[in-house]
Amino acid sequence: MAEGNPTLIETALGAFLHDTGKFWQRAYGGQQNADAEVRAMADQILPGGPHGRTHVHALWTWQFFHWMEKEGLNLPGADRSRVRNLAAYHHRPGGGPEAEAGAQWLIAEADQLAAGMDREARKDEDGEASGGWDQFIRTALVSPFAAVRLDSRLGEVRKTYVPLDRLSPEGLTDSVERVDTAGYQARYQQLLGRGPLAAVAVPEQPEIAVRALLACSAIVDERPAGRLAVRSQPGGGGDRLGAVSVA
Image (cartoon, rainbow, N blue to C red; front, side, top):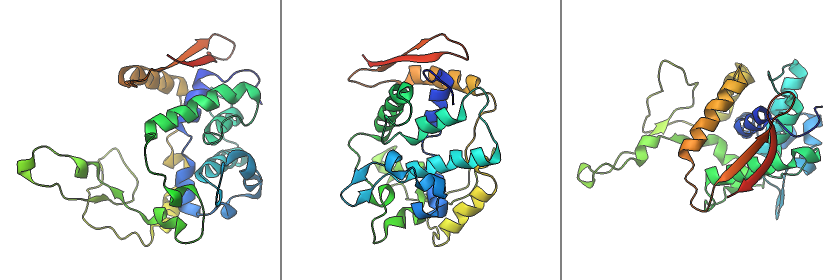
């Protein structure tokens, strides 16, 4: 395992891949279906709640990296174990080596800001309490165009759904008014069966992707109460995450 602070590339990849487990969770369901080595990490990765552990998708994110380890796959220009820690601890930052804690808190903060601090908790997806907790697996994606409001004189936009399928460069799947979601879990498994890395686009040259992400974040950062500032310090193996502050 690498020593010292995470590099900028490792931090960006950890943020990029932190919710990979949501795809695995939809394919395989409860945490009892994860590998034994992964289940053993539950107490460290998952926060606790009144009805037990919550945010189980974070454990499935660890499963994704465990799969990479078993397959002998690495992330070019980054330490796989460190990226795994940064990604998986996003709901319980501070786990793993002390040097990674700052970057884990950064990813956790960014996750909250991106999701919306005032959103209603989605208990079905966050926990595994009995009674239809897995309904989110069979929930169709609402088309983003259904929320478009151009002019009241045009009337209400019909609510349509995007069928579960692989996105391709040829174009998006047309949205439809009804979707049969009964076999969605099997469909997630089929998509994941094509290769977990096909479901998550890990860049072959992560340093280029990271620079592009940083450039975009500088443009869209409109946080009213201040902005997150990341100060990197040069070091062997790439820029190291030196400090994080809220200005």
